[in-house]
Length: 97
Image (cartoon, rainbow, N blue to C red; front, side, top):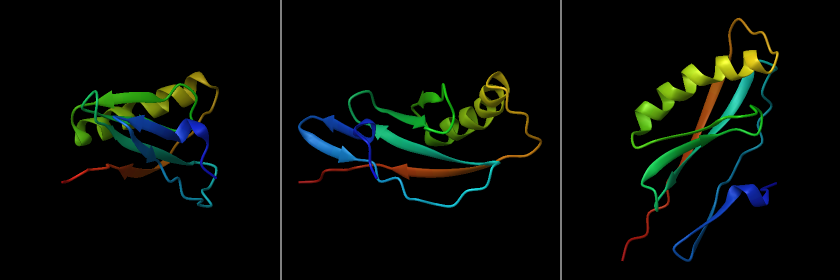
């Protein structure tokens, strides 16, 4: 199910982020990465990790930022994990004439 939070409007185009349903374990998290055309940045967020909202002009740099921030955010939230698995799902809508 796609929530209203996952629907964005860019320049009259509706972009729907399709979040697939996976059976992730307790130490696994789905991170959604999407391109914001107006700001020209990649954005990362996850409903499973409170406080996670990061952006970067570079896709690879964003992945590194996420890998650094998530353990810190989980620790702040009281989750103590030795090893976690991050599943990245990216989407970039391109309109061509």
